Structures are given as C-alpha cells and as structure tokens.
Length: 85
Image (cartoon, rainbow, N blue to C red; front, side):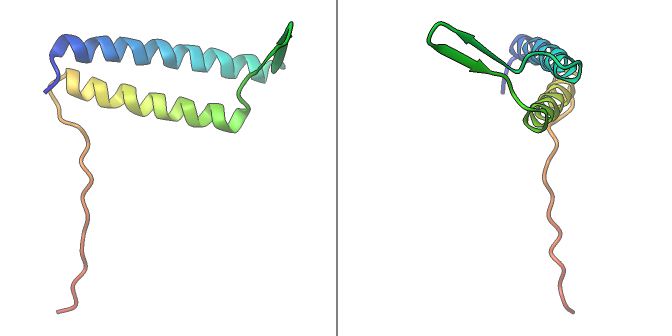
C-alpha cells in the first residue's frame, strides 16, 4: 500500500498536470500556435481530440487519488455473468 504522503504528492502532481493541459487546450481554442521550429528542431503541439483524451485521463487520475487520499478505495471493475436457468 502506498503511503499517505506519496498519494498526496501524486495528487499534487496530477493536479498541476491537469492545469497545464487545460491551459494548452484553451490556448488551442484561442488559435494559439500549434507548431514551432527552432534551428533544426520542430515541436508540434497536440491536436484537440488527443488533448481532450489526455485531460479526461488526468481528471480520472485525480479523482482516483482523491478517493485514496480520503480513505476510500479505488474503483473496482465488476462483471455480471448472465445465466440461463
């Protein structure tokens, strides 16, 4: 089991990452530059769909870590097997 301080550190990291992702998304909405060239290097920023996917994943991670930090457990996957009686 991960310690409470480690969980809080991870939570803070993902919160900061989520803020940065949201800033990047807003910059793209405002028509910000999508690619840069510096000498022989080129940097291309994420497109909208992949950026939205990253934001959703970060939000899920923050929610999971919040649950762990507050003493809750992770969400569990449950399967139902239909039977023909």
